[in-house]
Image (cartoon, rainbow, N blue to C red; front, side, top):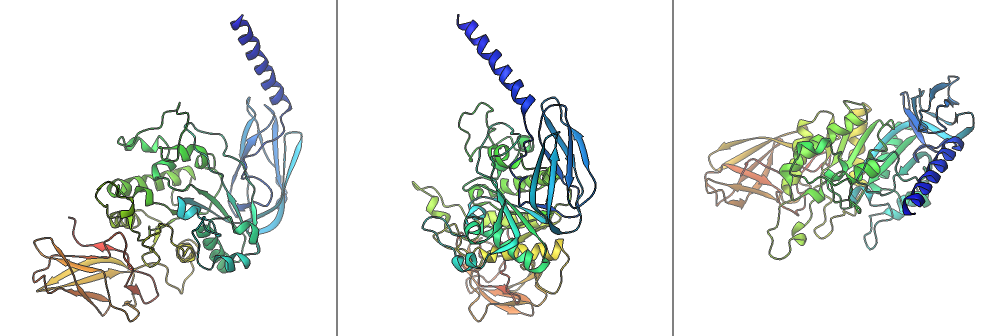
Length: 476
């Protein structure tokens, strides 16, 4: 009797599924909807589901061309269209014999904004965690040419055809308050210079390690990272590939100009591994977007007292090593750029209150390297080499053509060590674009460090106002 009932039940499910396919209307992933921005002057893909084996016609109003394909036996379809120079508003008609219309569409510059909590943190702040000047920024945010879409949180153990749906929003106080602050400021500064529509896609998840954003295939090179079982009933954002399956993988294929990234805090205790994971992640993002040189700009994690996470007598891990790993990626991976945030960190909060500085510095990178603008600085100085003579070290730097400043304050955070490998506080002086160190305890120096601690306030800046990143000359 049980087997008969089970068979009847399965038969009914099949009939119901066939009825659905036969009567299904066009369904699109959530990020294809009214008010969206598509990348200008490109060939973006459009995809979705319809009735099986039907001719699909896509007709954008910015061209007289019609783009066609055919849905497969399951109803899936995909095609590419062509976009013209920035502008709008437009419509897009999609038909499988029954038509749907997307309205108020614009063509412009589209950026993917991803990471963990410091990317996710909205303009209104988190509960009991404020952002500087956020209410004024929200009040003045109305702009019909800045639009954004937030992919809802989801973690999955298996690949998904689509992410959870949401709606494209137009920048105004009510919508901006709930959108990523870092992403909004990035987009705001892009718009101020480009004066064309800006589309921002936010795919972020607080407290998430980078491996959760990566595919199982890309993680094969890291056998030390446990894979997430496909049968896992409750996949979490701490598990490998779960955010990739639930949020990122369904998005890939949507045409973007570039990507900004703010993540690393959850990987602070694995800096050596992170350098290679991060490099692999960027490689995968470029492969998934079908852009081998996809512009990729990221925020270096800000100083913070990670000692609060050391419980039960556990050793305190120095997050300066994670910042160093990020610096190595910026130096070794082409068409990337790192926004240094040494001057906005907070000792007791992992979420800096100043989100505009990070968003603006990421925009400087994009405007200079991606859009070719000139006349303003866009990057922080970085350590280049050291010269040792007698009892002093002379440090040389890149990306500081006009030299350094401490804005009238002492140059703190420098240390020197001799053959005993014990570091002592060093006196630092700016000399013709170089920094000269001495320490009375070190008569024969062999190494130096700057700001190489969990939390420290930046004291050295380029004359254009960009903080020097933490660094070390040793490899101990």
